[in-house]
Image (cartoon, rainbow, N blue to C red):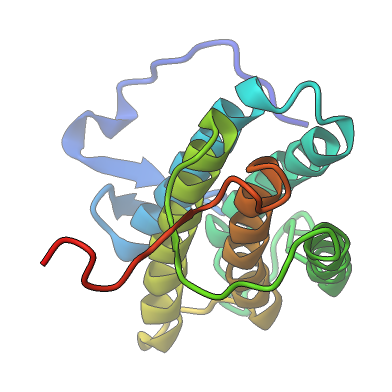
Length: 192
């Protein structure tokens, strides 16, 4: 269980932070950047939820995702080095990915097919969800790069989850825009 009695420790004053398993890394380390970007996406989902309280089913989905994103941050902050740990590290599992897919399908069933790209915007919830989507895509790029680095590991489930998350956020943004009826569509060459 997490216990946070003191918020500042001063141990990061040298520009490093401790991973969950103990080793210290620079705060600019790609692994730290990746889980920091996950935290940023989570914050934008929290902002979107300020506009989804009356959309109970979607709000519950977003709340589950916010919890999953803490799981993902824990997963990333405990790299699988093959070493034996005194505890079982928290990992993203296939069931979390499958749940996202089910929820994407449920929301998408209410939407008309797209005939153009969607501009980020519309309702306040949609705008915040689009920001969260783009931040999730940045986290995904960081995680993919990290997974390709020698000596680093990112699980297939973690990569699948972050990939599916941006899809979910796109569909959820459309769904909050009157189930797609209030989407702002791209008109190619409109302002030439």
